[in-house]
View 1 (cartoon, rainbow, N blue to C red):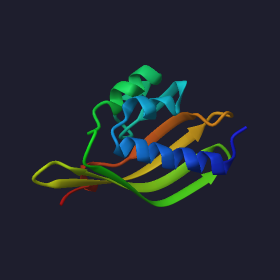
View 2: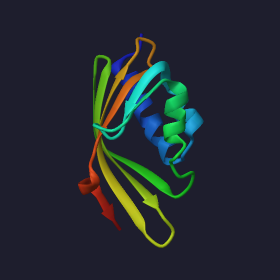
View 3: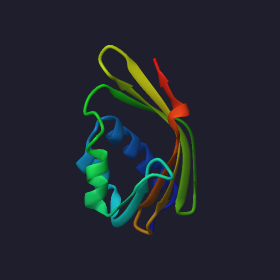
View 4: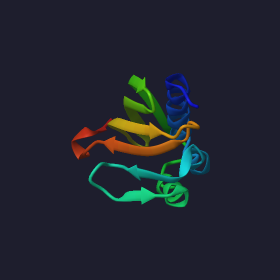
Length: 123
């Protein structure tokens, strides 16, 4: 049975792997039938293969994740974080609020990311 502390560690690992663009490793954190809605209101990716495809669009270099606030209670986590991506001649920063739920064995069951173009800043 996963604990809130285990789930917090999974969130931190998720951010680390996402910033590195390691789609296979990010997908491995999810349950087989997990869902990702990023951003909320957009397409819902269902299942590990679809989730792997979604994260495959992340850059594999030049990104950094920074977490500002993380709350884990029971089988849920909410966190405010930013992803900064180096695009070569300029950088882009997206500020995101994400909510995850976890299975009993600590895999990510659902992830919803709350952000809009208004949360994207060119640096």
